Image 1 (cartoon, rainbow over the protein chains, first blue to last red):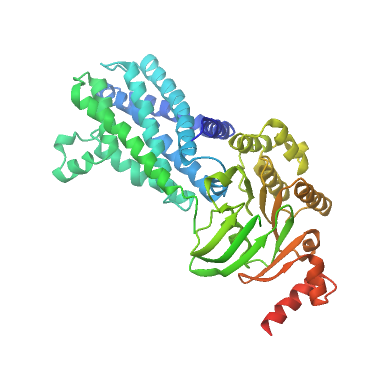
Image 2 (image 1 turned 30 degrees about the horizontal axis):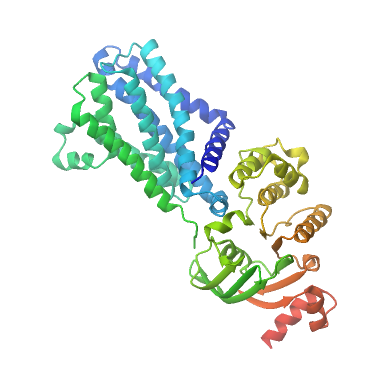
Length: 245
Length: 236
């Protein structure tokens, strides 16, 4: 792995995004729009907004980075650029870490903007540290990016890649505890939820939001989230083949 | 020693036997043309030489090493048949990226752009360029490093004749400076521009040698005719 190739890749991915201002506008604008929508949707039930607002700040980057990364990497595979890169002095990790760094920058901007609007404009309050929410949002973005990279190997068209969003992301959101608390789920669903990485990052966000003791369970949440990113990246690296049929 | 030595190479792609057991040599410092009709296995052979093709058996040695070995990645440049550049970036942004990965400086990038005649398009986004221009961006990306071996898959298809002649001159300049070039084409009239030829048909080498030697051997006036006679000779 070389810092040069990693940096070059991160810069290249960011320049590609900059060439697509509409996507950037959607990435940055949609979460703000949705948080605002929620605020007014629960105008009479302010407590609901306070309970789910914090976790959602962290979940938006997960969803958007998953979609953007899976499409970008699929294009890399289908346009032939990936094959070309595989003939160049570029380690697979250069490519993956380059992507991770580029999308971390985008996620940081996204999280900063939506947090500012939510905390300053919409009166969202979290019991814990706001910085913790931002840091978890960033970790979620990386988790979404890593999963997006991985699933792009299983899509042959952009239609398929887009369908992986409801297939891989929605079940995780349904089962993470946001909609139904996990202890009220059927046992089988609770077990399924145990196996999904988003469950842990949601739990961490929920703890920071409602001010419950962080402690050991929070440490486990963070460790599983980071471990999930590493595992998905490692599996993603395994799908990048220098030689293909 | 040959720059490329292929021995009994067998490749199956998508259930089809593309190369049944191909052997060939590419000599260093020469422009070798890989000529043959579409579907004859040219791209598959070139992919095997740069080490991105999964092979069933046989061996491919490149510059004294196993094809695809990590140390070859900065010594061998590959220009795939498809444009294989980033359509949403400008010409310059594309070449800067490939240049940085290869450790090439801005003068090498300017030289590559000038070689393919894209000076006026450096700030244009690639997917807005014509097909021929995109093909040239892709070729420039292969030229930014200082490779010892260039593997170019149909680099001159769809280009205007003047530019095509200039590119062939560039290929010979590069060979004159010590590089080895392996260039595929399905257009027989490009065969005469090569120092050496490998004629490929249905995954087998029909003939190998200099254009003059092939004409002399077949008694044919031009290489198209020579190719036909060689095919008939083998069938009969």
